[in-house]
Amino acid sequence: MSAEKFPATSREWHWRVLMLAWPIILSNLSVPLVGIVDTAVVGQLEDAKYMGAVAIGATIFSSVFWVFGFLRMGTTGFVSQASGANDSREVSFSLLRALSIAVVLGLLLILLQTPVGWLSLSLMGAGETLNPLVEEYFSIRVMSAPAVFINYCLLGALIGLQRMRLALVLQLVLNGSNLLLDIFFVLYLGWDSDGVAMASVISECLAAGIGLWALRGYLKSELLREQHLLKKLYTPESVRALFEVNGNLFLRTLFLTSAFFFFTSQGAQFGVVTLAANAILINLLQMLAYGLDGFAHAAEALAGGAYGAKNKTAFQQAVRSSSLWALVMSVVIAVLYFLFGDWIISTMTVNPEVIAVANDYMPWLIASPVISVWCYQLDGIFIGATKTAVMRNTVLVSLVVYVVLAYLLIPVMGNQGLWLSLMVFMALRGFTLALAYPRLLTSFG
Image (cartoon, rainbow, N blue to C red; front, side):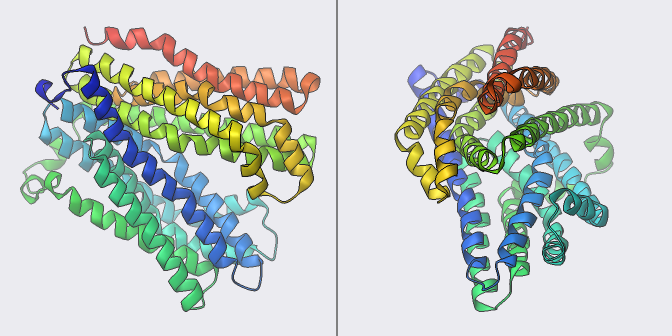
């Protein structure tokens, strides 16, 4: 993105942010729909064990695949900076590097499916009845790993190039084809949980194929036929940057996963009802990311482009504009939870005890969007600038404080203390990144 392509006025900046954010928000809304249809389709089968197998299998893969989310984030950072510097060749190289890693990691996961599957099933404790079905689901679904990781890279590149509408189309193709294939395999062909797994594999491959075709301009044949391509592609500097950025993002994701795992494990001590109530509220807390991600991704693209162009003024304007709209969205979500939180909970469970307990902790959910918006937004800004070591360190510090605080507060406040500790964790992530922000600005020179 050259200097003249940056918005000239504050109003234009706000408009650019909104135009980049809405496709991501819209595409995110289609994600939970897939899970709902998966459950509804398998729920038409007479035996409930198939629904259980899909639920456990989907949980395993969402957890495993989420750890590899660094492929999306890292690609966005590298591509947005190369685009901001008007270096189309480096955009292509950044995409090729990411795709090569995606394919290798995907194939590695397929090769290691036996130990990974065994470990996952052991942790989930599915039981003798469900284990064979989950194993079958796993053996089919794992074949989608290369396509899933390729899609992460393609989505990252599209965000970095600010082609959000194409990213929306790709996500709608992925989720829409998944829905249709679910219905076809299970309801028409009479398959069970294996049909749901096969639908996921085909839809991921379809989306990957369309995405590669859409970005074919950056994967030109003449580029791929260049002499000494691998030597040019994997220079010592690029390899070092690739491993540093992706390694830091990988560790950050592990720390985040540990934080929510800790929350669930600590909540279990308060009994089944409280555990179920916490699970509902945590799902709603994580769903707010669907709204905030749109502006965080806009920040990644705009801040990354400005950072690549070494345009400090544009960088600061991108931060201000995207953060303002993220704050507005967080307030809107908080108001929606305040007005409709009770009703939303009642649609997720019919158990009166769980509903009552969940409502007791509703204030935490209402406060969470305004508290957590800053860590989401600053994550986007630092991803765009590929300053991932800071992200890794701030999450680790926040995690340590969170765990220590939880152990101190839970004996005194019970589950309220656990929720307070989680809110401190989210707030501290944003606060520590905010402390690092001035240093990020000095890197412009």
